[in-house]
Image (cartoon, rainbow, N blue to C red; front, side):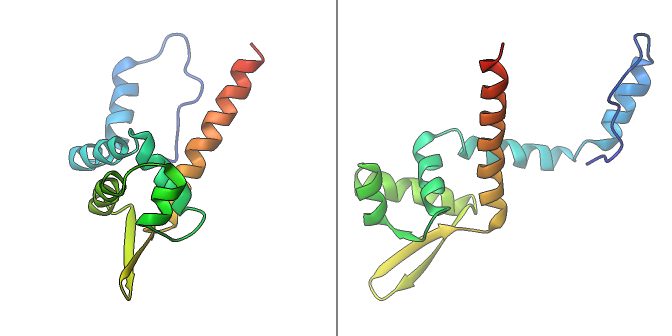
Length: 127
């Protein structure tokens, strides 16, 4: 991504130059597609709740069932999607499988999203 950003454009500016600048700094089409797919995973509140819970502690399916009040099959289905998207990983201990967030990037996405929501909510509260 660009580190140089046009923050204050003059009233009359060169639209072609601005568009060219943006185009030159966009991620590749493949990266944009993959990013959109990643954000689709965040579009389901059950998956977001699972990831928020896993950002606090490692959990098994039955822990998540207890926490979220959903069926074991529903939680397992969501965990499968999260694992496929490489947002959640698992480890086996005996007969139990424990789930955690895949890495710190996932925690960062959640934290940044919440910060943005809280920040914009505060802005709208003062309007």
